[in-house]
Length: 242
Image 1 (cartoon, rainbow, N blue to C red):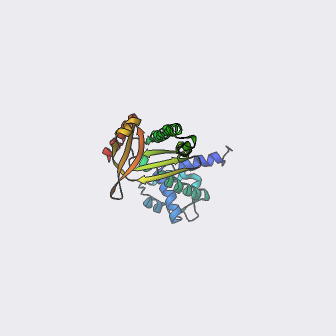
Image 2 (tube, one colour; image 1 turned 60 degrees about the vertical axis):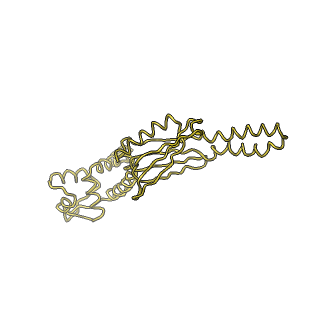
Image 3 (cartoon, helix red, strand yellow; image 1 turned 90 degrees about the vertical axis):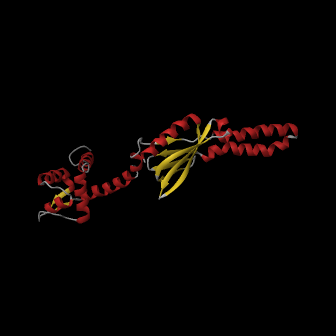
């Protein structure tokens, strides 16, 4: 529908009306306070010039109506626009910690390479036991091997999104997807190396953050060494801005 009063026209009109801070203030003021006179709107919305207020009221179009007593009030479309504004503010507020980062997001996907070493060892042990003892001795290691091989698939994957003032952990499995957010200023990052991790080419990354007046740590996980170095540098850059 594209004619006057059609869906697209109303969407365009509402979005255009809410695209200005003063007009959003007018809509919010009328929604919360009911009808108001022109002078009251100027005072509450902190508009000093009457021509400016007239311009914004005209831009609000069908969202605002003038009553017989000369005051202004929201129309049914105006009230729906106010509800939309509240929902939009709530949604956008969740993006602020991420938007304030030097980069929109630093994305880290931990590896499960370290989980593959155990199945390999078990496979070798199974063969050795089978040769040294008897075929029945292979059954327990074989069951353990199957469980271990299936674990990475069942446990799913983890993605960590690091912003200036938040860490968002997204866990995805075959059946579900869960998101957990930790609010706090990023203070730094720690890396851990040992012989086992070096053998697999992995580095353990841990973020240090300040939340609710306390210093705490968040373990990202085991990340390929080359990628870990880049991400650690990015996280340190964020920490310096805090």
